[in-house]
Length: 72
Image 1 (cartoon, rainbow, N blue to C red):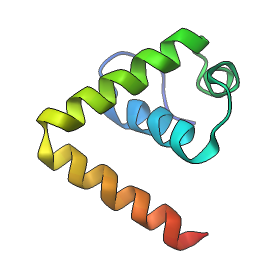
Image 2: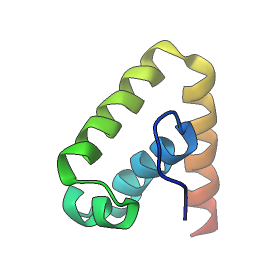
Image 3: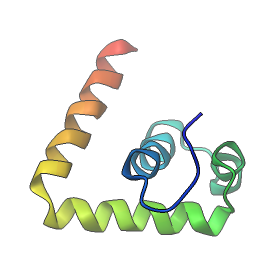
Image 4: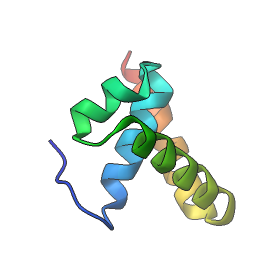
């Protein structure tokens, strides 16, 4: 499991991808990551906002998404 704590971009990306691919309610995703449902929303918004300004991050996340899709 990914470690808790602020400043863990890998963890935030994992929350974002979990919501994207899983479609579960934020509360259920939050339980897995040991955060509350509203925190899941905040993380998703933060990652999406950062993707708009950081093209490298966006590219890396798109690459991860393609790797997950190709694994299915």
